[in-house]
Amino acid sequence: MANIAPFKGTRYNQGKVKDLSKVVSPPYDVISKEEQDELYKMSEYNIVRMLLGKDLPGDNESENKYARAKKYLKTWQEKEVLKTDPEPCVYINLQEFKLGNKIKKRIGFIALLKLEEFDKKDSSVYPHENTLAAPKEDRAKLIRSIEANLGPIFAIFEDADRSVAGLIKNEMSSKPIVNITDNHGVRNKFWRVSDKKTLDKLCGYMKDKKLFIADGHHRYEVGLGFSKFKKDPRYGYILTYFTDIFGDGLAVLPYHRIVGGLDKARLTGLESGLKENFVVKPLKSKTGLETFLAKAAPAEARFVIYTAKKFTGLIFKDKTGLDVTVAKNLIIDPLKNFFMDFTKDLDYAIKEVDTGKFSFAILVNPVKITEIRDVAFRGSRMPQKSTYFYPKVLTGLVINVF
Image 1 (cartoon, rainbow, N blue to C red):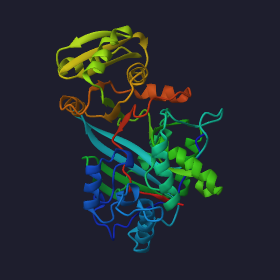
Image 2 (cartoon, rainbow, N blue to C red; image 1 turned 90 degrees about the vertical axis):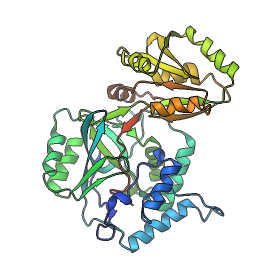
Image 3 (cartoon, rainbow, N blue to C red; image 1 turned 180 degrees about the vertical axis):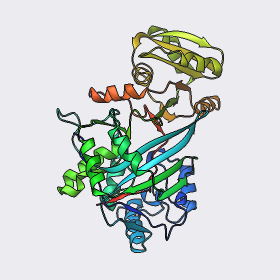
Image 4 (cartoon, helix red, strand yellow; image 1 turned 90 degrees about the horizontal axis):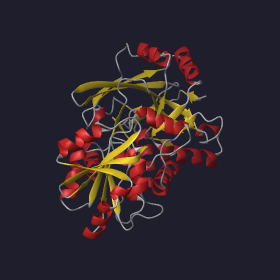
């Protein structure tokens, strides 16, 4: 069902760029302004200059970050800072990282995925989150300017018989062509596979798979729209990282909400109305919060509201539901005149409320990977920023230039 293809990847020339850790970056949508500045300083060839360029004084319709991205790509290719592999390949990416007290490894591969419409009877690709117009407009301007996929979308499949895993692990016996540690302490090892028999096997194994998108919903939709605009088969694929739902290193972190703009009266009104839909449990401390969340029963929606030194545990009276969906429908959506941010960092969420920058925080459990799969495969959607897959797939190890 999933139609994948090897491709001639464009990669940094290690003869010109000695330290690849200086030129890669996280995906565009998790880069803060501070990290953007840091990446700019790391190298004149850091891919962030194309991926998430800076707005400059005097920018206009013809001279802007999207036009500069196009110039960077062309210039770096002319200088052979970026070189395209001579034959179609699939690229294996092993990420080693620490989560809690454990060292984990996530194995995936990067190839092209044929774009298709969602929500059709014969679909093989499923989303799990809703998208927003502004990020899609931004990514559409970039792809139209540079005609390239810079960062892969992140897709998950089920390798129940371990056929894909066996094939990939066999290809990892050689020395990786890249072995770097990124800005966030994640070690990335990278292999190139060009053997046609191996590639044919891999593509054949993937044909019976259904996929759901973990990260990259906006880019997928933009890629699909761009392919329709171009009406050329070579634009009908998108750069994709694939990993197995049964793999040891597939980690989903909680994505907390922090909400601002409420005065004391509105906040008091919100708190007093919680008992209508929730069993309310006052908690004494952050330790109590963690214990409360850990006791969530399967399919039970429970989360914590934090306001000015006060933790309040909430258990949804209807029992079933996803934390983030229940919180959105019953707490966030009824609000007016507010602003919101998202963070995977519990301490940061608490601190932002303590400083008065935000009015309250909604602190949640991570969504289970099987819950995400089930939401996707039944054609439903979760609120935006419901999941934080960790670690993120690096941008810049390989790109796809049309």
